[in-house]
Length: 148
Image (tube, rainbow, N blue to C red; front, side, top):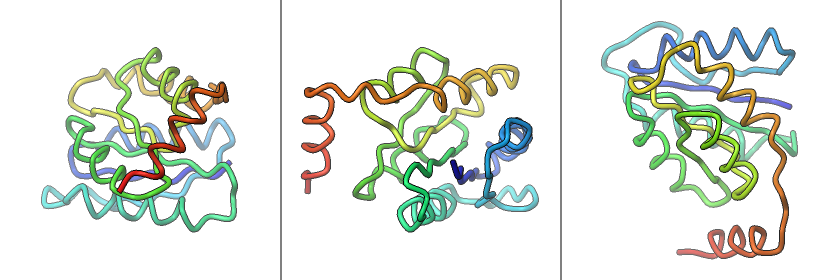
């Protein structure tokens, strides 16, 4: 599974931790974020890079992880693209539900709201949770894709 990861300046250090965790776990990680901390970074640019890479990937299960201060900006920017189901997860329960029920393909993490020790558990839960695929979940995803 290929994982694209990006952050603005608020999520820069947690992005580094997430990349290390993912690489040690054997994932193919592509860093779509800035290579050094820049306080002028704007989240929409990095959200767009991750989204566009997912949408053009040949990996049928490519996913993304985005980090910013609240997680909300990245989530809003990513969800503007058809076929993207970005979720905001602040703990393992929210990460699990977003995969099980909504088949999320981008995980948005609020860098200012969680302890860095929680990052591996949230990411692992999100990656390991399969989509339940029940009729009502599939129907709802189709309805979302038909919006706008």
